Image 1 (cartoon, rainbow, N blue to C red):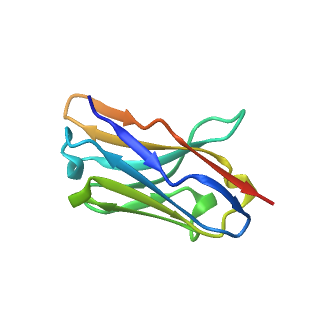
Image 2: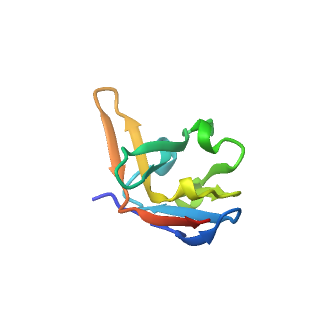
Image 3: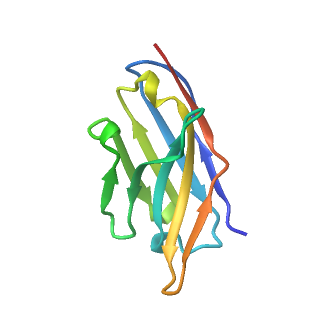
Length: 120
């Protein structure tokens, strides 16, 4: 069973920073997965925040470009999300995702989520 464990969430004032981490169990070949961070605010759909491919290419939601940075450490099976200049609208549960296309199907794994609350 693959496990993704997020950490680093919490309460921060607007303009502050947080760094989220997501550690993957060693049962997957971490470096072959696209890793992503998603978030879901109350009453809203889950949305992609940022993703990083196995080759290191990144993409971001327009709402976080220039403020958030995704990175990965394949040696430690860990992906990070550095969040700067946080805004109240960034408040949500943040989920880690691991995704890989096997050639026949897409495999997805999710973490349990970590709460990020930004106060105004």
